[in-house]
Length: 296
Image 1: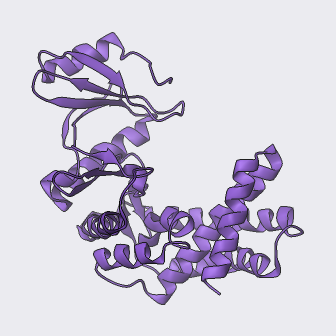
Image 2: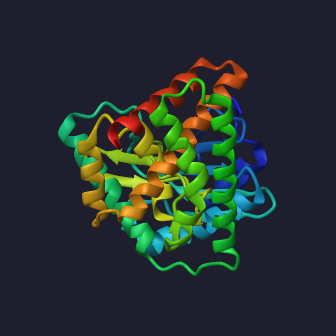
């Protein structure tokens, strides 16, 4: 999907059934092949049309929209207007605001946004969501796979890593599964990072978007990106986020978050080395170094 891909005619007609008098449709997809999203403008309002990348993602997102409606304030998430099971299309309201990732914010505003982000995630996590059959087994399988991946990555990178970094990755391989087994499941957003936060400066409102990876898991899984990319160099944002979340992480949660983030970092490094991708190499090395430095 290119940034200028036109909306398919049948989808445009479907959207017009719910938003008469549409004036234009603009491709707003992320720069990846599985992202297909358009903003459709009408005379007085706008909506978004999204084609889910798979039926599983489609069903997840429908369920997550219902969860968001019950768990979050009305202005804090888009509302699901309609969906089509044939095309895997969803039609949602447009939430005012700009994507936070990459948005130039003054320090006070950025701190406020991260506090609100933590608060929204706590509301999402705390609202009851029936645990589907097999949810715990799925989490255990995921942790087992990640631990095994860490062991393989350690073999591929150990000569490049400092001793403390090697020890951290080894702990992922050895401790991750048992540590995760002792923690409760919650309903995750699945990608609750600043790229899925919308900040409306005029109303000082923050909203969560993009629910296609929502599923049951461990609460700190929704914090991995922040832990690896932002918190090492900006601990005040971690403090603001967890203050908004409304409770400190337990010792086991803190340890699990560290190990999950280290797994992602060493995976970046290994993939970068295999594919000769310097961006991934640098990302992995920086993240591992930061994790060791800030959790020594």
